[in-house]
Each structure stands twice: as C-alpha cells, then as structure tokens.
Length: 225
Image (spheres, rainbow, N blue to C red):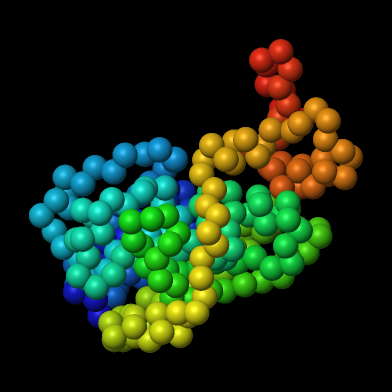
C-alpha cells in the first residue's frame, strides 16, 4: 500500500482510467491530474504544499519541472510509449519509417531531461509490415497498461523493489537522439522530389485519421486525403 500518490493521466483514455482506479485502491492518499493536449501548462496550486511517495505519469502531456520532481519522496515514474531507441515525441512515426522490426514501451524514472532517467522495465512486440500508426499504438498502449500494473504492484509490495528494477536494467541506455514537436512537424512535410519508395514509407509513418502528411506550394499547405 502506498501512503501518498500523485497520478497524471490523459483525458478520454480508457487505460488511464483503469490505472487511476487501481492506484486509488493502493493509496491512502490519492491525487489525480488529467491532461488533454500538447502545450498545457500545469497548475500546481492544488498540490503546492503536498509531497508524495511516488508520482506516476501515463500518457500525460505535462512536462515536469524540477520543483514537481522534488515533491517525490521515492521516485517520479513515467511510462514512455516507445523503446529507449526512440526518445521524445513521435516515436512510433520514426520507428515505422525506419522499418523497425520491434517496438514497445519503457518505464523509467523522470529526471530533468526528457526520456533520460534510469530505466525500470522495457516491453516489446513485433512490428509487422501491415502495421499502421493506429494498430501499432493500440498494441503499445495495451502493453503499457500491463507494464504499469507490473511496476506498480512491485512497488506497492516494497518500495525497495525500485532499486532492484534499476539494477536489473542498468546496462540499457537511452538513445542520444531526441525528437521534439517541431521535428515531428517537419517530418510530416513531404519533399516535392521524394521518390516513390520514400513516399510510401513516409505515408505509412505519418498518415492517420487526425494527422496527415503534407506538401507546401507557394506558401500553402496541402494535406494528403
């Protein structure tokens, strides 16, 4: 049982809700903050004078600052929707473009840098040529929730299990390359001289119901139908 937990989840995410219910049952004091979109600013007034055993972050858009990290007595933990090879935003886009054979999720301690802290656990699955962004992300989130339950159960039994998880994965390192939102936006742009082969790769790695690759002509943007 945890004494005090702060949990960051995502609005309209069924997995976030499942994790919320599980953490609430395992915590004497439970605090929940929900995020909705990129660029949200975190209002810390409600938690200004509070401290927590653990902070858990699942699909949240918020970026943690040092003062929030310091509110954690044991560790702030994030579940990253990508393996250590793909840091930052748009991990699945780049993995599909690279024709990666595997993808997955990474549980890690949050520090001052994005996707940089000690790794606690990695889960992977095979990527098929028939996989799209949507199918790959569904597999990722389904695996992430299993990973989150595993980590949380280990830590609720004994917080010293944190050190065992760190020790077990200490030789696994994050990639040096990290992608930001502006990098992903540029990645969605299609060069007018692109080859047919590269175009096929780019479409697979960028085309979804809500987001589309694009070309620019005379300062106007044209999206793929």
